[in-house]
Length: 180
Image (tube, rainbow, N blue to C red; front, side):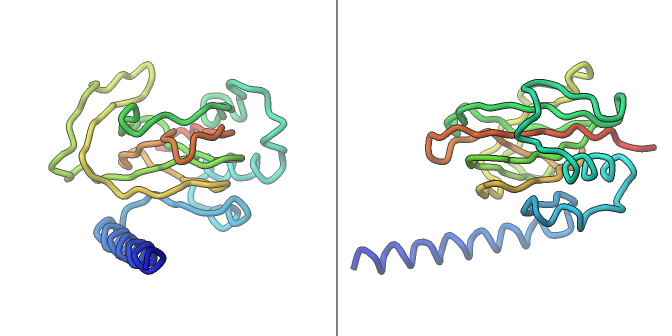
């Protein structure tokens, strides 16, 4: 009986997520497995630079911190951290750079919400030095990012670094300048 309840709960949860993803269909964020990242070459020169770097380098061997790839057009921040409880996480978006977030080891909750979300509220106005606006929201589409990537455009309001199971996450966040 317990297994049946668990199974039905998972089905209902999956259906809810499919409905939420359908609601956000047409948005630009791309989610996938790292082995398939070459499929996304050709979107822009700067995205291609980041993808080529991923394909030709051992990301786990990168030093912690910032590595410049192509001047201020493309760079990567390498980090290892223990993901935070959901209540300590926040939604954010950027204006000058898109993110290519790559989870190398571990897993974290990642979320997306739309600017039209009625529960979305600015908590920290845009900071041009850090290229970030921070938000709170009561709803969004949540998924687990595990040894994969999320290419997050500037208009994509996203949340990352949230705890799934208390483990350590090894991650690279490529900052990709928006091309004119």
